[in-house]
Length: 310
Image 1 (cartoon, helix red, strand yellow):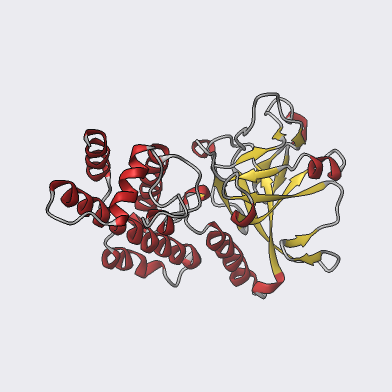
Image 2 (spheres, helix red, strand yellow):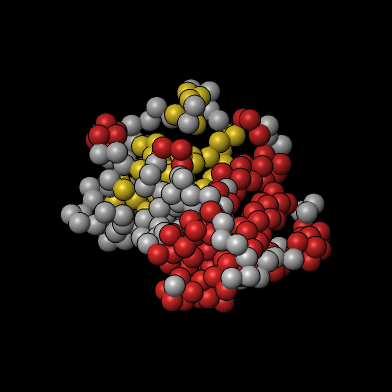
């Protein structure tokens, strides 16, 4: 009982307050008709989903506290929560569990501690983003409930500014020379956004020294590097800041269920997943510069992950 109470009190104390949506709407009002309106809408949707999770966590923690004190009858969800806390599992991860944390959270395979820290980082990003309704220079895309909504917003902004049909646009990605968001210089990239927090599985990206001769400029963004064989025992090397750019679909690209296939041997269409479970956590195709046979990266199951499992 002591361990359960310690975990419960720790989580209750560190649980951030809900976002006050009325205030956020007021802050967002002047920007809702601006060029970055789709990003403002995306941030508000994220805050709404985060509020749903925070309220559910707060309600169940209070109920468990009362249950342990004898003020409430112990219910099956409370029992399941105690079991999860005992084995340091995110409540609801077990498919037979009656807890609702997992249902309201994002796909993850982390244990309780790391996932709760992940939650705090996500709240921190949303707090900074909604404080002035200005889109961050680089977004931690892994910290969004619905990363695809952010990527569609990139396409919407480009489609509106260039008077293109949204259906006639898609995404391409470039790896910048910026290893971390603080290194980013200049303004927002042309027709796109910077995102970070990505990892590579089955391959790696060139180091600054290896890709020194490969620098090219996309818009006003310096980009470099190409896919390489991963280093032994380095399972998920982090990627540099990625430049996600909205582009007009070319006639010879093949429309597929996962996106548009370029049919270009110099580009590997790399799937991006939320976590290492892959499968249903698929998000979009990233275009990676490639100097080997594409079949090599297919055979090594090369993919980009938005989060590690620890």
